[in-house]
Length: 202
Image (tube, rainbow, N blue to C red; front, top):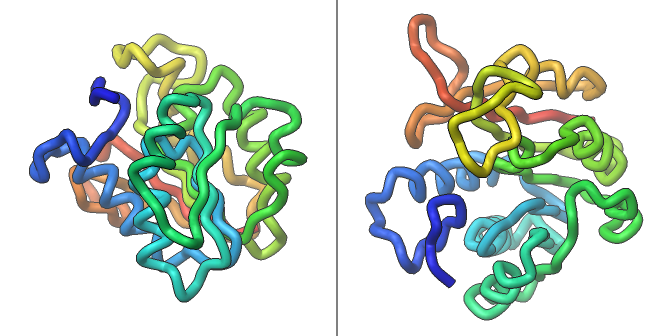
């Protein structure tokens, strides 16, 4: 498998690669929220699923990494092993997804929603799969808004910060952070942030 710009393959990238560092930062940021049965949806090559299983081994029962691409999941299975992690092929928009995967204490979804034609259906699936009291950590890049063109070839659209915040109205607790490089923080006045990271409790 070769790194294409959207697929992060740490073994083929320089440790100083900015995109790799940004992706790793999101997983490290999520680790304090991770517990119980964990879903990493759109896990790509599996490095983050493995990192979470390894870093949070005392707090998790299992970590399941899911991706739509069979080749990517095959790579993940061959590259990353941990007794508490596993990988499987599934489609985030498949109506049977909640039935196939079950329910979780923690769901991680990093840089996924911008690739999906129906982000509302995806959010519905996440809600159905998250146990009461469970935590969702979700990130996405900001852009011109739902249904509007984006310069990123693999993105269907990129939500505005307002549209992003509106995704989580059903949750009992919502904290929205912003990412710039490897820094994930509450918003600071005068700083432009290209990405949002939401931490939500059902």
